[in-house]
Image (cartoon, rainbow over all chains, first blue to last red; front, top):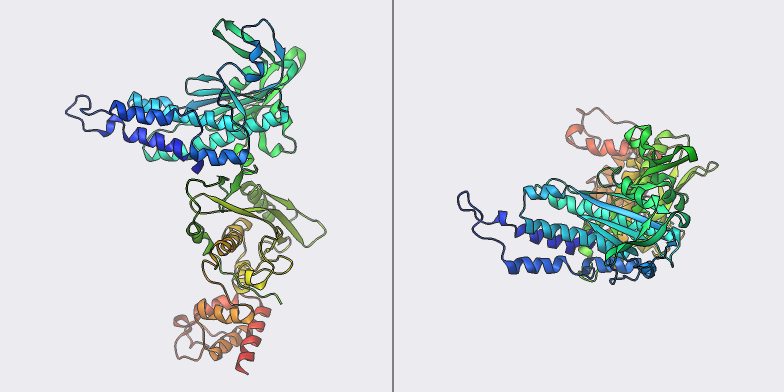
Length: 335
Length: 217
C-alpha cells in the first residue's frame, strides 16, 4: 500500500545504515559505525507524532478526527476514574495486535537498526488505529493493545472501525513489510490479532494500581479473551469473538469457526462455563475479503486491495494507466 | 444455478471482486453481476470507479460472450465512446469476442482481459483525449480494418475467396494449394487465418462475405 511509503522509507534507511553494511576489519567489530547524528535523524522521522504525509491522504478519506493527545492507560471518556474509587460499566472493543518474529532481526542487524525498525512498525500501527478512531491503551513490547469505542460511539461503529483498522494494518505487514524484508533475506515478520466486544454489563472500568503507578482499564472477560484469541490466530490472521461477529450483519462469509481451520473441535470455543451453559465461539476473520468490501478500498484489475487516497504528494500520471488501457481496442457496431 | 462451472467461476469472481453481487434471475436467460469496477493504475493508485452490469448467458456459459452495461452514466452516450444509448459497451470487435467464446471463457479472465482494460481505456481517453491503443473504425469499416490488421488480408477478392471457402466448408488439406489462389501450400499460406475464421459463427462469416461482396459491386 503506497500509504505506508513514509514508514517503509524509515525502515529502509535504518537497514541501509546498519553496521553490517560497513567494512569490517579482520574478525573485530565494524570499524565504522552509524554516526549518532545519522541515528538521530532516522529516529526523528521514526518517532514523529503526526501521521506521515503518505498516510495523511488516506486518512482524509476516512474522515475521523485524530486525537493525538491520548495518554496510555487513560481512555479520554473514562479519565475521571483516574485515582478515584469509582467504577463504571460501559461496552468496549479490545484489540490485541502482536508482532511475531521481530527477534529474528537480531540475527541480522544491530540493536539501533532494530530499535528504528520496530519503532516505525509500531508507529504505523498506532497511526492506523488513530485514523480509525482507536484509543491506544498500552504498548506491550512490539505489540499494541487498542480500545475502540467510547461514550459517543455506537457499538456497531466501534466494531466496524476495529475491524477496519486491523485489516488495513495486517495488509501492510503481510504485503509491504513482507515484500521488503524478503528482498533483504530477512525471516518473515508477521502479526496476529485478537478482537472481542464486551457488552456494557460485562465490562467494568476503573483505576488499577496506585498513584501514578496506575491506569484506567477494563475488567472484562472479553478483554482477556481478545488477548487469548490473538494467540489462536494464524500468521497474519485475525481471530474475533462471537459478539464481534454478531455486530456485522449479513456478513457470515467473513467468519469461520477456528475449529474449521484446525480440524480440532476443541478449538471451536475460546471460553466455556459448563454449569452456565456458556460456550463462546472464536472465529477466523477473513480480513482480506472484508477489506475489499470497504468504501475506502479500491479493487484493482487482479483483485488486489488498493487504498483510495488523494495523491497530494505525487500527482497521478496517465502514463501509469496506459499499460492496462492499451490492452483494449474498442469497436462500435450499434445502429 | 444449474451450470456448475458457472457457479464455481462466479464464486471465485465474487471472492476476488467482492464489490460485485450476483443476481441469478431464475426465469431469465441471463444472470447478472452488478457492481463497481475500480480503476487503478500499474503504480497502485486509484483513479475512479464505474458502476457496471455484466450479463451472462447461463445455459451457454462458458461458450458465450458476456455483455457489459455501464450504469453510472459517466460515459457520454455517443458513438465516439463505443457505447450504446442504453449503456452497452463495445469491448472489442465481435470477431475476437466470438473467437474467445468458441474456446470457452472464464468470467474472471474475461473481466481482467476485456472489461477492465476497456474501462481503463475510457478513463485514459477522458484524461488524455484519445485511446491508448487506437480503436477500430465504426461499423463495417472496422471489420475491414480487422481483416487488415489481425488477419493481414487487404485484397477484397482474396478475402471473398477465403470466406466463401470457409462458408462452404470447402477447405482443402494443409498440403494442397491455398484457397487464396497462390500456388503455395495452405500450411505455408493462410492456414492460421482459415483456422480463425472457421471458429467464427456461420452468420458472422455470411455477414462479412455480404459486406465484402458489396464493396466489390
